[in-house]
Length: 407
Ligand SMILES: [Zn+2]
Image 1 (cartoon, helix red, strand yellow):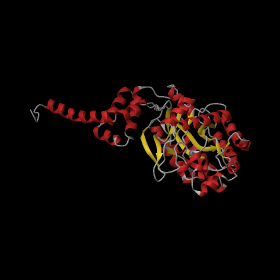
Image 2 (tube, rainbow, N blue to C red):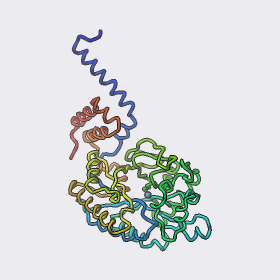
Image 3 (cartoon, rainbow, N blue to C red):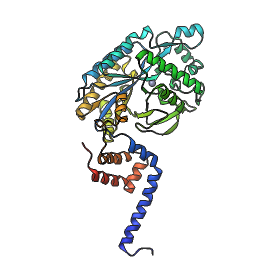
Image 4 (cartoon, rainbow, N blue to C red):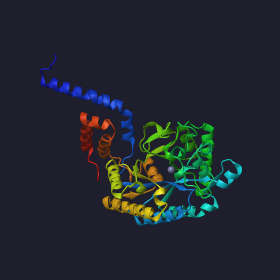
């Protein structure tokens, strides 16, 4: 009989009306909910500065690397570990003289004598524990796309004698894993990808003595085929901006956005890591706002991986000095704000997360549920829905039932 007259039936009706949409939401968002529940929950705040584009290129990088290393080694966490900057390395630039002579693409590798001082600065930083080398790419472009470019400035860039800065190339030509001869971009041939991955892994191993375990795809555009080729060669982790992007549109802008990815989610034989916070002093990013990113990530028990580029630390002193001061201020302010902050390399952190190391990860159900509830509120659409329907509160109660999150 409707409406019910018995208070108990009223209660049952209300619960049913609540459970039905709740169930639908849970079913609809199940893959995301599962990914977030599986994502590691850190026990400590973690800050890693991820810096791209180092390697073959301007020789002034040597001094920049030395100055950055000095700052990193002067900032230590409570365990005595220095701050770590990962260096995503480019292994070659065009060999201008050889290109002029042959009319064909030729490269000059980071193993060339010309780059000895740059390599040494990197190696010294690695020995001090302040640098960790990662693969960015053999080149920061797909050579055939560059050679086929009808842009006069690109052809001049290819044949200029000083080691070129890839930052000067048009943005769409800085992508390595797509054919941007014409736009929108087109996928590369599978065998060309496999050959190119083989070449970059081989050169990286020759220079750094080991296979790269972490790759940062140039401009964050790559495909499943590239990923599978990296995995087959021994790469274990791919740094992502939290989603996969596989092409550029007719305007040359990144497009073909795939679904979101979470820390340690698996791809084609690799695990993903998420880097979606930024520290680019040349774009006006201040230490204070970057500290807010660390606070947000810590509240969600995630590591704060900061994206930055060598361009911040190269060029005129009046631009570089403030950038270095901002870096030092950021690290110091982070240590002051979070005395339990930990510095570590991306590869070592990923290893600790993958092995479930209890020194780094929270395994107790109560604290994990509290973090899960907090993470849900940050998912677009689901966050609002979960607050509206009360899912967030239910999880908070469950977390309290199983025991509060440790501080
Ligand atoms: Zn780059």
